[in-house]
Length: 162
Image (cartoon, rainbow, N blue to C red; front, side):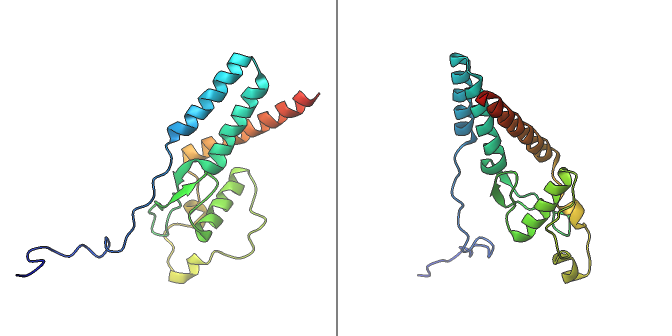
């Protein structure tokens, strides 16, 4: 008797791949923000509201589960998972993300010393690094909202010390 008669081998792309661990649900974070908002309303405390705002800003900058979304040279978006809107999946993509964040602030990246490495490898660039690192509209809007929230929370904290 032949063991695997009629059964095909799994495709090469599936062989050896691991399943990624599940992340916590975003509902857990939003429940925490709702608890902070309810506590601020219940206590009539603007300081607790500022704490909740600061927690949301931290979540958006550093902890929200998202995708890299940096474009490849051919124009396809990277689908690797990352944490935080400020981060990318690897060093090359992080360099492009840093440049995009500096451009969002209206400045040029002062720490970029050399030309991008990936352009010279093939000799053909379909999508330039400025376009590849461009932030999507939702990312841009949420980064700006989180920055405004952070500034508001810091100003409120300084005001609370008086």
